[in-house]
Length: 96
Image (cartoon, rainbow, N blue to C red):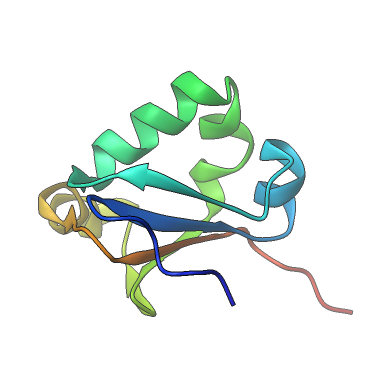
């Protein structure tokens, strides 16, 4: 379990291909950020992550799923990630 983020920051957790792409399991980022701002920050920090990971990922904020595609994008665009929040990027998983 990740440690509580420092004041003024939130925790970002990476799973599966997101962790492989960033070579990190987690990091802390400055708060507040909207979901689109987070995605822009990630693309600037990890070029290609938008197309390779974020385009097909699930996103949670404090264990609540946030719709990041289709009609849900309007809600996600207005969602602000606040200090102390825990955000997770969860790529699709396959089963067989």
